[in-house]
Amino acid sequence: MLVSRQTVQRLEAGDPTVSLGVLASAFFILGFTSRLEALLSPQSDAMGMSEELARLPKRIHTPVADDLDF
Image 1 (tube, helix red, strand yellow):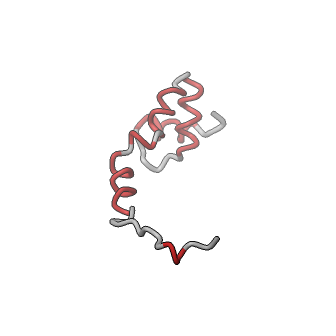
Image 2: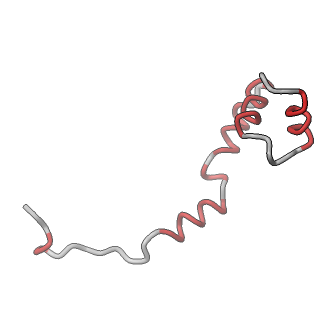
């Protein structure tokens, strides 16, 4: 994984300050790339999806014929 023993111990202990790159390397080495893909999938992030939906405009402006440039 090219990281120190201390970093691996922090990863095993669940330390949230361990970088995502180290976590991804561990998943890759252990053969859990499909689990990593599922973890990073936007569909599995309910909080992120609700934030994105909240940012969408409430109404959509339909252009009037005079607004169109032909």
